[in-house]
Amino acid sequence: MSTPRVIALDGPSGSGKSTVARGVARTLGWRYVDTGATYRAATLAALRAGVALEDPAAVAAAVADARIELSVDPDVPGVRLDGDDVAAEIRGPVVTGAVSAVSAVPAVRAQMVALQRSLIGDGAVVEGRDIGTAVAPAAPVKVYLDASPEVRASRRAAEGTVGDVPTVAADLARRDQLDSSRQASPLQAADDAVHLDSSALSADEVVARVLELARAAGL
Ligand code: DC
Image (cartoon, rainbow, N blue to C red; front, side, top):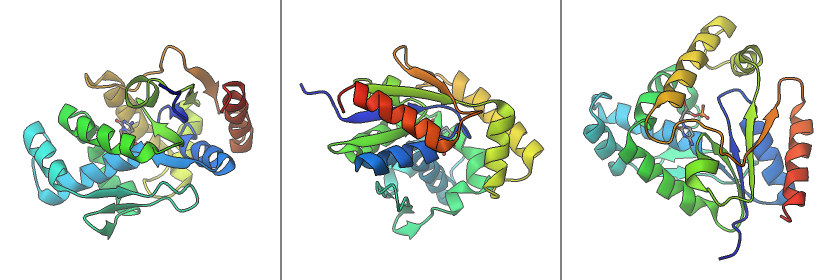
C-alpha cells in the first residue's frame, strides 16, 4: 500500500493547531480537516435533539441521525449541521462546555472517525487529538503541538468567543483533564510524533518547521 499523504497534527486547545494546519494545507495545496469541528457539530446535534448527555446510547443515536458536512478548504473552513451553517455556534460556550462529554462516547468517535477518513482524500493536513494514534496512524508526518497553559489561554481568549483569560484557563484545564483521561482515544502523542512547543514561536515559524518535516518525509 502506498504511504498516505497525511500530516497529522495533534495537541490541546490553544496550541496553535488550526492556524498551523491551515497554513501548511494552503502551502501544499492539500485539504484541511478540522476534526474538532466534527466533534463540536456532533455535540450541537445532541444538544438540539435534547438528549441527556450522560446517556451514551441516546447521544450516539442523535449524532447518527445528524448530517454533518465539513469544508476541507483551508481558506474557507466551515461546518454545516443538517444544512445549517453552525460555524459560529459550535465555538460558543454551550457547545464548548459539552463537547468533552460527547466526544468521550465511543460510538460517536467511531462515526466521526469514519467521516474524517472520508474527508482526507488524496492529501490532507488533519488536526485533532487522536490523528496520529487512531485516525491516520500510518501518516508519514506526525506532529504533537503544545504551548504553555498561559499562552494557550491567552490565544483562546483573544478569539473573543469564550470569555476572559482566567475563565478560559479554567475551562482549558478542565477539558485537558477530560480529554486526556477518557478511555476512548484520549489526547495522546503518538510514539513517533515530533513534539513542537509553539509558546515562543510565531505561527509562520511553526508552519515552516512542519513543511520541513513534510519535505524530509518526501511529501
Ligand atoms: O480542537 P477543538 O477545541 O475544536 O476540539 C473540541 C473538542 O473535541 C475537544 O475538547 C476534544 C474533542 N476532540 C477529540 O476528542 N478528538 C479530536 N480528534 C478532536 C477534538
